[in-house]
Image (cartoon, rainbow, N blue to C red; front, top):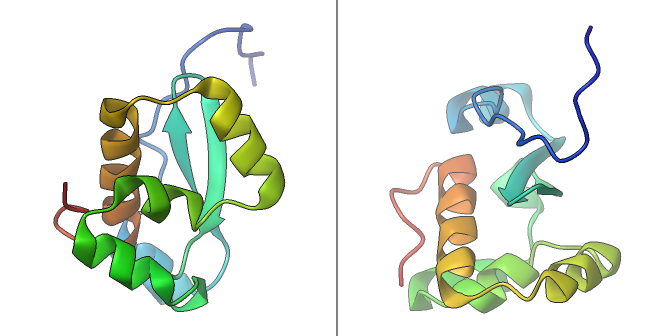
Length: 104
C-alpha cells in the first residue's frame, strides 16, 4: 500500500454506514476536521446520555465535545474550530448515528 504524503487530505468514503456499524456493534467511527481525525463511539448506545439533549438542542459545541476523550478535546481546542467547523462535525456525527442532521 502506498504511503500517504504528509498533509494529504483523508477521504471519508471508507466510513461505514450507520446500518453497518449497528449490525457489527461496538467499535469506533471517525470524524474529521481538516487533516485531523477524531474517534468517537460507533454505537450511539455507548455515548453519554447528555449527547441526546445536546443533539435535540442543536448545541453543536457540546455535542462534539461530549464524544471526545480528554486528549482529543485538547487537540480539538487547539484547532480553534469556528461555528461552521462545529456544525460540519455535528453533521458527520449525525451521519454516523443515522440522524438526518444534528441541528443548528
